Image 1 (spheres, rainbow, N blue to C red):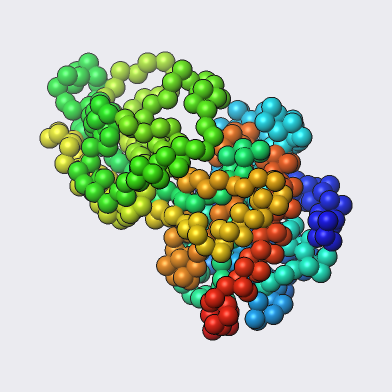
Image 2: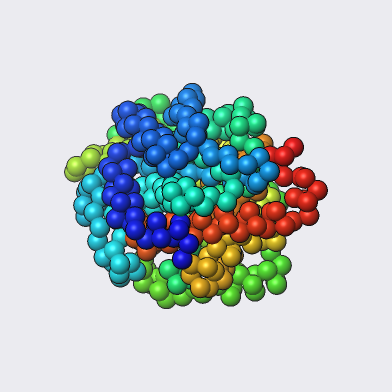
Length: 476
Ligand code: BES
Ligand code: MN
Ligand code: MN
């Protein structure tokens, strides 16, 4: 075992205690009432980077929450890894469904995590996973074994669309110069089945408003005579899927890249149990697009889902009323090569056209994000693969994920950099849900695996043709 790994083994308890402190701060970016906590978290991250040995640590102000930056440049001729993560978290509601309070972390054993898991909002998404990088860096520094340069860019607005990080990236090309972006904000298949995420879905998110009469009406006096916006909205939403669960918006699938038979056969090799999946969610059966398996429906196919719907009377007892307005929030997950702007436009045009006379339909776009696929024949992927093999004794499987990290596509567009998605969470870790948790096994495996990525990435880069020709980003 090298000195880095020895340091990690000796520091496990300290690492965990530090993560617990970080999880106590409710850094909810979506809710302005928590603003001071989000800022406080940025300061804590900055301190931990400094303590770990980073130079030029900076809390970079933006129009929203700050980006925490730090770096260690040991030699201009060595490659540079740019680590991205986020310190903001999702709101914790519904609070009453948490077994212990969301911001008072506890360690509990579960069936999937017999060694224990840390429960708390952000444990997996993404404080726990982001912190693995800070601790892996600390270990390499303390052991004097950092093999290449590293830069950290930890943001506080991922859960609300990374709009200000987008601006920060555009304005800081020089500062962010690197050879690869390394992210742990995704998952893996199982603790005994490591995997590397090779794709993320894009996102188009809209809010719709259907207005009927100009005021709420007595449902006896007016019922049957006017368009009830809630009835109409329900009908309009229902019409967005056909009997095969295909999305009916004209042009929606036009740009979708269909996978070849061979690619789908390759995907099907990843272990998956439909039975276990149903059991874990207490469902008799799944539901989705005809002709595709559950793993396919959740990764290589686009979707449309209502995320929230409201209107009318929802208080206690009965109130006989026809509401004037009905609302819904709708997300569409996108796959290559769908463009969020184009899809939002198609949705808007279609949704406005299917409203009957008697209602007005308004569509308001929210933030979106481009889909991503990352190559598996790259140095970054190979380095990650070798790193997992070292710590799991198994070669990781490439898997496309259904989630979205909108900024990743922008990194490539703006900085010309590929991303490696080395996630250590599990789908069952309940991210965004009550009782979010992160396995201690996963937390420590992450910290152990990351230094090997640095090692192999440096080795492979220095041996590559472009390196010999002096084409490393930071040599230009
Ligand atoms: N870390 C997640 C995304 C994720 C999770 C990708 C698991 C793959 C596997 C990220 O924090 C997230 O929640 N993204 C949002 C999008 C954002 C614009 C709110 C999402 O996917 O809903
Ligand atoms: Mn995340
Ligand atoms: Mn998230």
